[in-house]
Image (cartoon, helix red, strand yellow):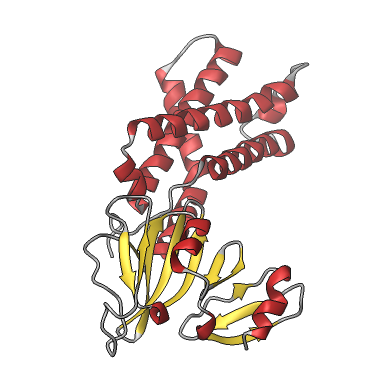
Length: 276
């Protein structure tokens, strides 16, 4: 599957806030504790607060990019956010943060802008970010490469021995073209991915994965009480339970044809065990 066709769940504002906060704090930690790039030779009565300023600049720049992208991007593109979109978004954030940090550095120490200094600053910052960014991009591609978006063109996923009119589930996403019809026994698992869900469906002898933009609560209402929400991030088809393992504080479920170990909330452990 190409990168453009590989979906990526566009992070909610809260998730992005957690990520940009972690990045900013990491920058402050590295600068204050390890003091690289000659920082250890820098002597100033407010040295600590000046170094903290890089983290603040990164945090504010990241928020600015997030709001700008959401303002300028259509709902259709947001609902169809792919790995390519995430790559562009990520490098746009890196670029803006680097420019902002350079302007901060120039204002604090030089008092003027210099293109050669900027290029050198940009080169160092890019090299630092290259490894973690590359690892992150590889991780998200591997995680979602087998997932496809739900579209109105999807054919009904059904039991071949039953007519689709007899019994079926029609599941709707947030977008007008996000709709899928499936026989209940072919819906094995629903997994939450921030503002999205991934449906694990059985088709032609194997599990396929389809992503749509929606909440777990809404999906739970649509598919009915024959399915069980065993965890805040998982809804299972009880008929597909193969094994339950662990104790009350660490119970996990295995479903037929699915390798993922599904956690069970403590409040749901007894109810799940009664289903076996």
